[in-house]
Length: 395
Ligand SMILES: *Cc1c(COP(=O)(O)O)cnc(C)c1O
View 1: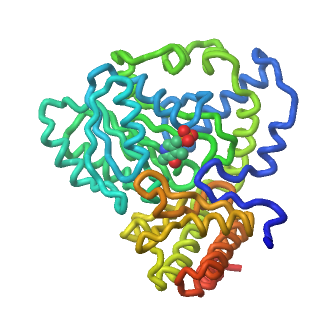
View 2: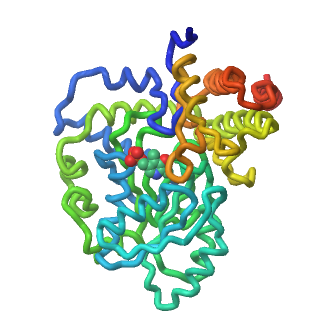
View 3: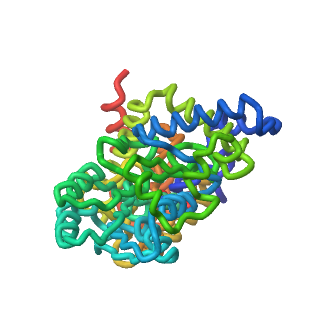
């Protein structure tokens, strides 16, 4: 028997739940690709992507997922043989670095751990050793969706400047943009990238890259440029060039609706909502962890992200049965552990179009699964989440 009729809850870190407004925005005929309304739509989206990244630089929209936006960022500023320093804190910066290596860059990984954030002091130390300035770019994920860590991008930016190093600071904001504060210019980020299907509540298929003047200067010398990703080609006056071909019209309609929702709520309110709901998840996990069968993957509370929580099972216990139970019996889809955490962890995403019933419902189902499967836990987890939200969200 099951209790899963009704709407399925996606609690995976992307793609995330699509608002009905976003779905409806796509349900319309295609339009002329040379007409004024589509040109105005592109202009409005590019301006608003700058607003999300908080930059006075220039943004590009690619028909691509996050992996495509990674490649767009790399090919526009690097040449074969350039050295790239990857700051490890999970899987994603390393994945970006692997793409750089495939393209012909020389990649060095600043070894990190999967249970903690990148340490700015270690970055500063490594850069100070590079007196000849051979490192051309530094790659880091703001929030690493595999480990559930949030990195201190502002602090790493300061460390790069303290080392007096000229490398481009390149940040993956796929799992953070539109969910938590991101300050591209104030933090000294030269290239930032993101995608449509996580915090931005849109279908997968759009990749975003924002670049400042330093990155544009590096672009002029870059040897890895290709026609599809190239910024100079996309800077052309003809609208068609901005997408290197036919614009992804329906994805643009969707994104417009999603960004309208974010701005109508107010970005600071959106960030506060994410923080409150993430903390509700953390309160529940803290209580469940008293049973010693599971715990947070990220050891230090302040390094746990507000968009995804990675929960590690103790004693080599397989999280598979819990995920299967939640999905098959209750219609809640939890994220699997990936990379080093495959078969060891599960993830609860709380990013994008999420509210209290979705998060409390998900937590309730996880606690139900822990009970049904006889996994040791303290059973007051959902109660702790309710108390946190009840105290924090004032009448
Ligand atoms: C999801 C994700 C990616 C990859 O995005 P795709 O759209 O799946 O290619 C990259 N970086 C981070 C931090 C992510 O969460």
